[in-house]
Length: 270
Image 1 (cartoon, rainbow, N blue to C red):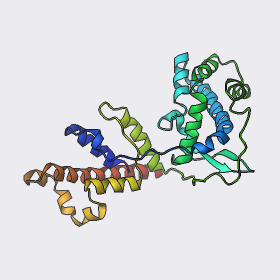
Image 2: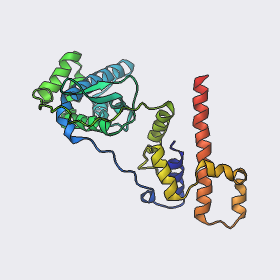
Image 3: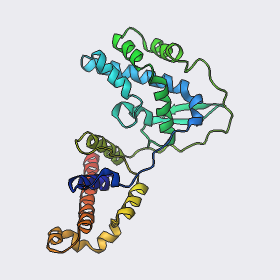
Image 4: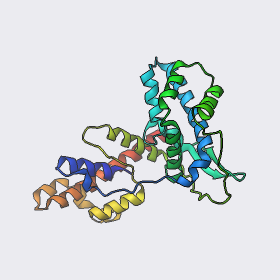
């Protein structure tokens, strides 16, 4: 799913091309109109997740205050491990109000996911140090901690704007497949590699648009010319230009990475 992106970024870097030449992916924007109606639910869920996360981490190793603060600061970021809890949440209209409900599985992070992430940032951003200190001291029970964060440190649950029924546009919650989770984790690892900044996840539609922009052929087209793919060395014996060689290499490496993901999935099923 992400092979074409990784291969392209790698080759552009090593052949001296800038990342700015990569096809741009439009950012997913939050639904700002929903923010006033979900902040209490988001605050309570964020506080609970943070409390449980620190509790679990503390049982495995000794945490200093900086460790705790680092976790708090990353808890609203859907691009890192500590923000994965957000991808299980969904915004639904229920009982003349907007509610944030939790699914058992992680979903693709689209507009509602980004809305919850933005709400989390708005709530925690200015008080992350205070929250970190409370969690590090470990003097509160879960219920007390949630109430302190959402009613005292913030006004997230003190007053709630009246919701007008039917004003929310719903976005279907779509579960992530195991391959998509593997791809996401691989992308996170790629971002930590020096010289590989700005890496992003791409959907199938994004990848198809990228292939068209770069002139990279689809699998059906590759099958029609499979003999050429099997003899990669012949590329060096022809007078192909740089971009033709680049396209050929991308197609070959893309197929190998997809095969690798298929093999990993197959092994897990055994």
